[in-house]
Image (cartoon, rainbow, N blue to C red; front, side, top):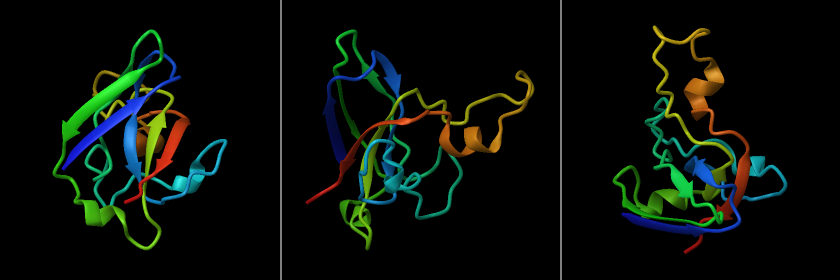
Length: 126
């Protein structure tokens, strides 16, 4: 599958970008979209919805096109749908060497990659 995203009015810099498990985008926090799309119960960064980091330029514009085999289109249209989320901070993909950092990564880091709050949300539609 090829995914293309174009976004504007973001804070310049890197942003976590994921498919989330529920197709609902209720502002302001977009927590209605649930957690990362993860039908196989994998740990982060192996959730099916873990996507490449989105980089916003100095004007707050971002564009990204990539291919993924983590899911198929039909997987995103289960009973409650799915949504794309752009996070406020970059996703570290839980890549924190335990022997070099104290304290060790906590459960939130290991589950979400410390991507921060949800800056934008879009329900995935056909």
